Image (tube, rainbow, N blue to C red; front, top):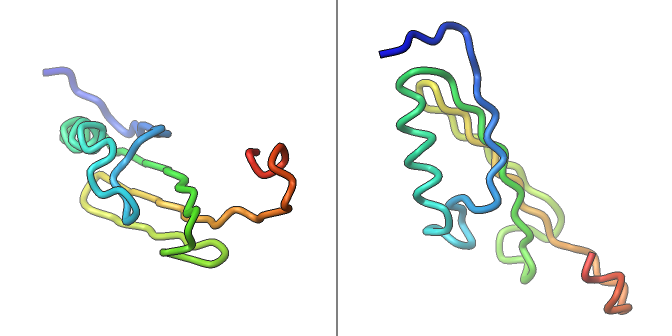
Length: 88
């Protein structure tokens, strides 16, 4: 087994389990847990909360477990009424 010392892997997934979709990207979370046996993992995941179920503005949740830190940021997008702008 390779020995990794003092390294941290930053993970920026496009899918990751969260309160709006608890099974999205669960395989990515399992990979993070597997790699955490050898080095620290820092996950940042941003979730668009279209319906405002989690927050009406923004909300950040941080979970720490051994070598894994998960930061999940929820945000409710602002609506301008102009569909082209609202897509962004």
